Length: 134
Image 1 (cartoon, rainbow, N blue to C red):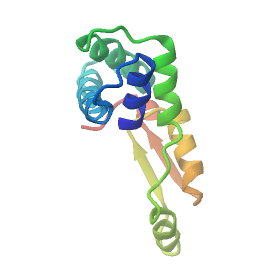
Image 2: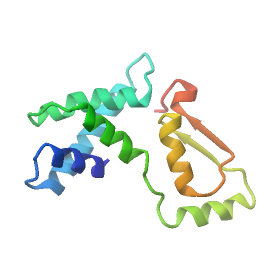
Image 3: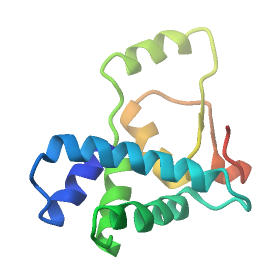
Image 4: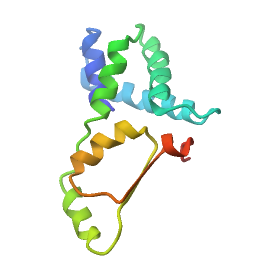
């Protein structure tokens, strides 16, 4: 989320204290997304992100663009696993079936699963369940 916040801030020429501002924006953005996730009715994660993206940048004095939303989705869709994760999952896979339960949409988690590089037996998303876990 911090990487996405930094990319969005840079596009809006808000480069002073970029690292500090991007961390603060990412934290605020996470809070806004959780707020929207918790409000019925269920909405897909991409819509939750769009709502948060419409709300949070206005607090900094600018309006988010469609390009900002695409930047956010692009970055979230290519999050790499921590270096130790594939090896740990391969060891677990020797004895167990593997499952991912994620508060996201199918297409966003698909990129993460590919990046992990380990076969996952079950992927369950908020989009499939039509609900976010609390």
